[in-house]
Image 1 (tube, chains in turn brown, blue):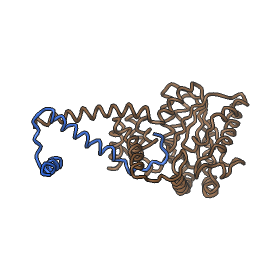
Image 2 (tube, helix red, strand yellow; image 1 turned 180 degrees about the vertical axis):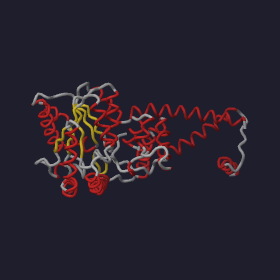
Image 3 (tube, helix red, strand yellow; image 1 turned 90 degrees about the vertical axis):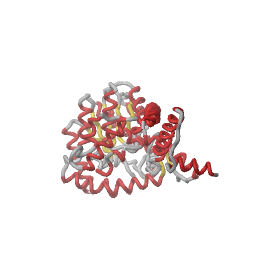
Image 4 (cartoon, helix red, strand yellow; image 1 turned 90 degrees about the horizontal axis):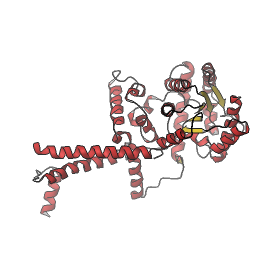
Length: 332
Length: 54
């Protein structure tokens, strides 16, 4: 038995070394972290851009700068629109940015219909904290377990399990950056097996974008109906985001993003969506925040979308020009 | 052939491991880490990443 101490100590030492190495490597190669460092380096008093990949796709920084400059309202841009994240990711990105010592002049938050409502329960939890959503492990503190896992610790066995897994996963480099390893292994696997990844753009495979659009569309109708029945429900993450931005004196502008016609007809133009927008904009006004609706701009056309969700370069230029004009107008 | 079978039986745990030197025990610990690394590296092979920057 005593002889087992040698391999046990060896294994533990090697695992600790591997954990440190992965933490060092992962931190440098985690693109949301790289995006954060770039945003912090942009300076103080910037436009802080928040949202998901639809906001990232719509942002053409050069055009936005031009539009702002024309009105004498140009400022630095801190782009923290991170793909595949939701409003909880936007909160964590904003909080992390503010904790880096920066004070944005204006926080611009991209939105599509129900996207600022709390994520559905099946879209939360440590199992979903992969890829870009590893920021839930990298940019959180242990105390965030109560916000990340509803009902932790004693509401249910599942809540305790999820909370415990979250705390364990975020505690080590091996836990935080495990999905980085998985992505690399999947690429190697695809190369070895000659798997056809299908046609894709910078956001991913077109088939995945179409499937994601269908999923968002199918969920949105029910979520918007529930939100119109109880406007204050399911806004915990958005409330946190507003509070943390307001605590640093940032003006908040929520901008409605355009979507392709099929989505607009089924969701954005539905009675529930219209009613939700009305109550949401009223609540924003009560909190001193502004709402800019670019979802139904006259130029929105399916030809300006790269896939089922994201604007292409021409669409981004149009969107950014209009966003710059609106922000300049609001600054006067 | 017999030595290959004995090696496979030892790796599989059917045959007891007879390690005599400290270096052998250290190698045994490294073998555990190799097994862990294989499991760790392949655990997310089926995870769907839709839009990820890594």
